[in-house]
Amino acid sequence: MANLQTNKQKQYYIPLERTPETVITEEYKDCEVRWSKIGCRKVRTVLIPATEEQYREYMRPLWREDKRQQRHGADEVSADKVRDDYELEVPDDFNLEEEVVKKELLAALRHELAALQDIDRTILLMIADGASEAATGKAVGLSQKAVNKRKHKLYALLKEHLKDFR
Image 1 (cartoon, rainbow, N blue to C red):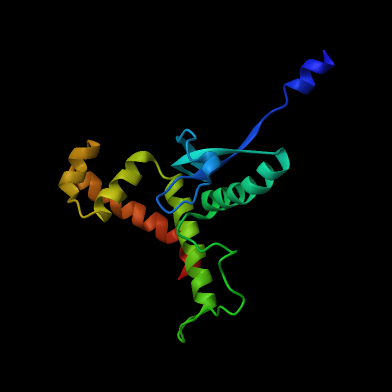
Image 2 (tube, rainbow, N blue to C red):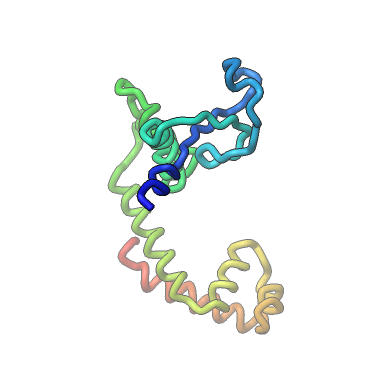
């Protein structure tokens, strides 16, 4: 039984992207080209046999980069690509305290909006998008006057809850 397990060791392959610029040795010229996932994109590849250590070392940076992109978004600059002598330019009129207060206000506003009923959120959203009170009333099943009253009550409620940010 032990012999069967040692004979069935897992074979590892490193995917090599096949592009017109890729240089491939004679040994792999006639290999089957297949679609593989490298990072978070599918590309045409040739599979190159490798040891487990080689495979793990090759794939580790891709896993790390893929996870970073999932956490921070693909449009951010990779920490590996940023040079040590890179200096961040800050505008002269930048006020850190003001920026922090803005972020806190937005977080509090989102929290308050999440606590509203669905109909109230719909009313505020439609009004913010430029819909008339009559059109909003038709969408939510209320009269124009009821939408007007509810809108003003919502504004007063939000103003009261966010008074610390004035």
